[in-house]
Length: 396
Ligand code: FEO
Image (cartoon, rainbow, N blue to C red; front, side, top):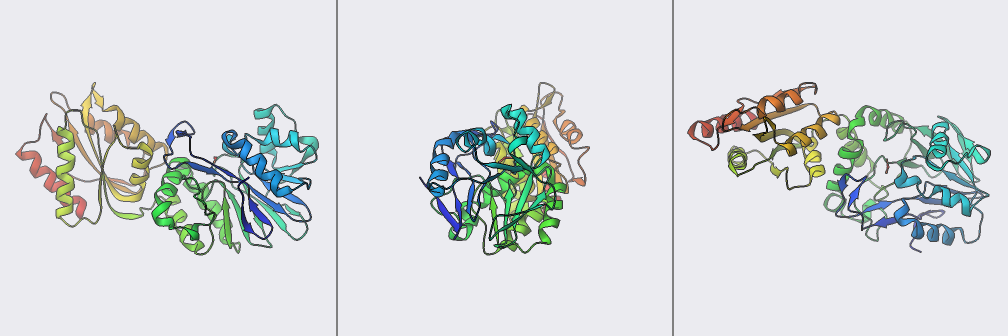
C-alpha cells in the first residue's frame, strides 16, 4: 500500500500513473498524473471517488489497508469520467455493504457505463443535501460542467474541506508529498496546473465562475481535488488563479509567438518578430513550433499571455494543418480577450492570414494587431519593416 494522511481521519488512497502516454488519449503527460481518492474514517466510513483502471490494484490495496477490516459504509461519486469511476463496479463487488452517494445523473451514468442499476443501494442527493457520518457533516454542491454535467463537489463543514472533483486539479504525479505547500508548487506544478485547467476545463469558464461563487460563501481550509496536490495554506492564491483562468483574463504580460514552418522561412519571420519584441522591452516572449512542441502547452500559453502571434505558411490552399489544429483548440475553449498578430507565408496564393482570422471571427473580444505580415517565399526588406511595425503595435 501507499497512502498519505490528509487529516487525522482522512487519508489519500489514490495512486499515480507514470506510464500513461496520453491522458484522455489527447494530452501528453510527461510528468504522469495522479488519481486521487480519499477515505474518511468517522463513525461511518466514506470513500470519495475511485480511480482509473490503470491503478486499480494499488487503489484496492490502499482502501483495504486503511479500512483495516471495517466495512465501507459510503462511496461518494462526484464525477463519472472513467479516470475516477472505472474501478467503481469492482469496488462495489468487493463491498456489497456500501451505499453509493450520488445525484440522479450520476446514477444514470453508472447504469450506462456498467449496466448496473444502483438504485437499491444508492442515496440520491441534490444541491444542498447533507449527510452526517458521526463527527463530520457533508454538504453536496452541484458543479455542472466542471467538467461534465453530472459533477458535484462535497464540503465537509466540520474540517472545512472542499472535495472539489476535477476543479483545482493538475497534471503531474505526486512525488511523495501530498500537500501543495510541501513542494515548490510554482516550480513543480504551476505549468501543469495551467495546462490541465486550460485543456480540460478551459471551455467551461462560466461554470467554473459559478462554482467559485458558491465556494466564496464557504469557509474553506483545504481543497482535495481529484488530480494533483491537496491545497492548503494560501488558498487565496489558487482561488485567484482559477478566477483569472475562468474569466479568460491573461495571467502574464507577454507574447506567445506560435508558428508552423515547412522550410524555415516562416520560422525566420517568427524569430525576427520575437527579437524585435525583446528589443522593445516586451517582458516575456515565447516561441513555439506547433508541429513539434506540446500542443496542450501551446494552448495553455495562449491563455496565459496577453498577446499571441500566429505565423503560418499557406498549405494546400489552407492554413498549415498544425496551425489549424491549434486555432481550433483555442476556439473550442472559448479563447477571447486577447490581442492577436498574424503572419502568413505563401509563394503564389497566400491565404493563411485570411483563414486564421476567419477561424477567430466568432471569438469574443479579439483585437488584431496591425499590420498583417505577408511573406512571399522568403523575408524581404518590406517584411522586415512590417515586422518592426507589428512588434511596436504588440509592445505598446
Ligand atoms: Fe479527471 Fe473529468 O476527469
